[in-house]
Image (spheres, rainbow, N blue to C red):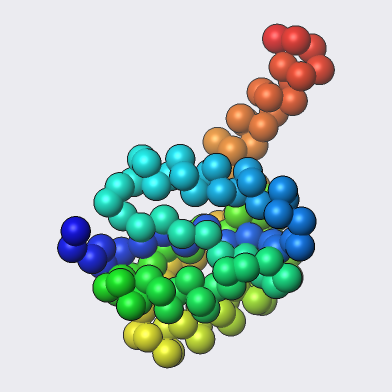
Length: 126
């Protein structure tokens, strides 16, 4: 299979608890199925792994030349405002990648509406 020049990277908090990552791994698998053959990878902040630069390096080695990064956070805290832009800038400088940073999931009305529907159904049964 030829290398994909564009990939999607899901970026999230890390935790030493492996169960913590399961919903994110499920999201990655769903997206990989929908977006094939585009690579969809998952990177975490320490203490979890793999970390951002390790995943980006593996994508670059596989032929990726541009990357969309989706911060899987509900809100724009320090990791999204400071850490992620610094990591993206370092990756751009090191590998010459084109990198697009998406907004956090909580900035999407679509995501918030789905969450509200789910919560309503849990509380009211409808």
